[in-house]
Amino acid sequence: MVVGSVDYLAPRAVEEIMNAEATHARRQLERLARSARGARVRVSTLVAEGPAAAAIVNVAKTKRANLVVLGTHGRTGVQRFLIGSVAERVVRTAPCPVLVSGPP
Image 1: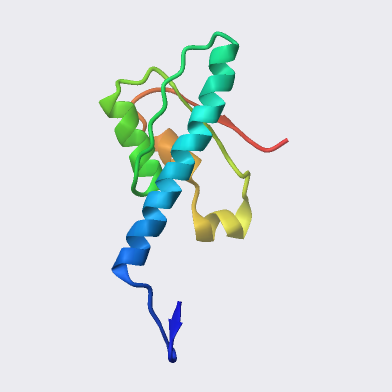
Image 2: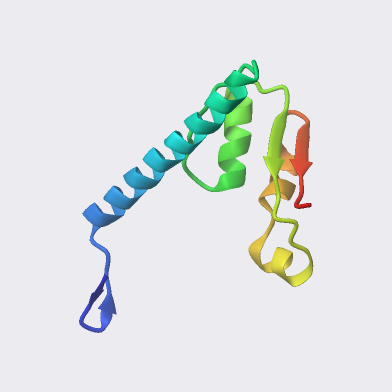
């Protein structure tokens, strides 16, 4: 939202956006979980907030995970240097093995 020449987003609007994103994430995860359950895979889902790598590692520790599986965009060079790599941070700090799947 632009008010005059100053960018401003009301705290209530930010809260509504965050809630909508969390709801969307839960729905998407449940859709994927249903598909896996249909193939007789035992699945549980969880939506966590915070910086991605830290949140993933924290959940892995809390849930005493045996394995973390995550995807990567496969960025290299300057993009990776500027943006960073969630997968790399998780691999370096996770309390368990990490399986990373890159783009085709």
